[in-house]
Amino acid sequence: MSTRLSKTVTIPELAELIDLHLSDSDTDIKNPSWRVLDSSISGRGIFAVRDIKESEIIFRERALLAGPTAHKNSKLNTCCVCYCQLTGNDTDILCKLGCSMPVCENCSISERHSRECETFRRWKPKDLSKVNPHSLRIVTVMRCIFLNEEERKLLISLQANSDKYYRVEVQRAADCFQCFPKQPEMLEWFYRTICVLNTNAFEGRSNVGNHEVFVRALFPLAGLMNHRCVPNATHSFENGETIIVRAARAIARGEEIVTTYAHILWSNLARKIFLGLTKHFMCQCQRCLDPTENGTYLAALLCREPKCKGLVLPIQTKTLQPDWHCLTCNTIFPHAKMARYQDFALNTINNRINTSSVSDMITFINEMCPKFCPPSNYVLVEAKLNVIWRMSRFNKDEYTEEQKQHRDRYRVEILEILKKLGAGDCTLRKLIMEEIQ
Image (cartoon, rainbow, N blue to C red; front, side):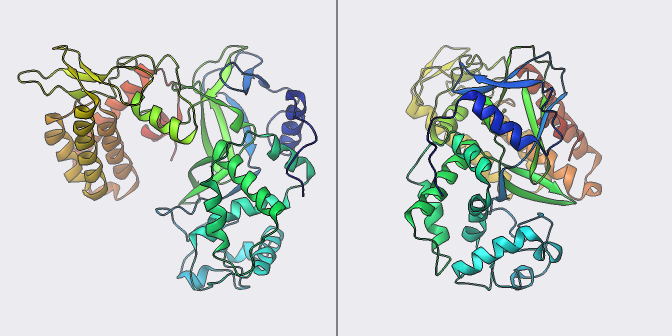
């Protein structure tokens, strides 16, 4: 199995591979609203070939590779094939043939699971008494073994940022088996696949039945979308292995279709740090160059000078350690001082999010937070989102009218921020409005 192509894949060749990949999906590949072209943002991108209306479905795509994220905070009692929720203890939900994967009764006899089960049994799992998150996470990668020749070409054609840490995922999985593959070519194939996944894959929540699962999935076409901090496209998962990409706003013919690689409500500085660490680039879009972020003041903290309660914002430079400037008294605060203040504020809010009841969160947001940060601060916005999610999803009938009024006010505030950003009909707006679950 070769992980190298004899020549670099050209855009027409890549487009042909993507068309083959989409051939069994609901996407119209004969008259698509998009095409793959060179991008001035980065490498290759997706461009509109006609005007696209707001909320219009641009394409629907099935995953080339997918599997449970198996992160620390994710539920491991999920079938690794259909992602349905499994009941019982670990020994109840593990495959009865001894492959160590959690699988439902229906999928346990499926052709897809049979070949994966045979592979894992050949590797000889060390522990069959519990679900191991490292062996479960490698399922997505292991599935590259079963790709056909055209699918392997498509996988190799995708950008793959390398990082020595990515090899840790293979090593952790290898430690779960007695006979994990040792052939250099196979290990390099796994490593290449992980690099492609970490560069292009989507990790997120997906609802399967009434069960929320966390899936890592590689969508070759969707993965070609470049980043902008205010994207014109938004996505959601139809199921664990299908993505739907829609226009968040009207997209003109010839315009590049872009997504965001970071949380749209994070501040400029938070996004820059995240993108630098995970995607290895520094965004310089219009929003990133505006300290106020379209008047949302997501990064703002309150001035610490006596008798001044002005907003303090980072001075926008290319450094990740900027000084800060008060918009009212014009005091310049050094990064070191503001970093301590910011860490205090953010840690205080995050600790409350992780430990407080909804009632305590509302009291904290309304009474304590105004003492050290404005209502627009992005971490405080995260706290408000946390209240909205919890009140919308759990024990809906137990909340008082007053608590519901606070929740509705938080909704209005966040929707106004999204409007100022120009986020359009994005998935987050739909979630806040409970148009989708």
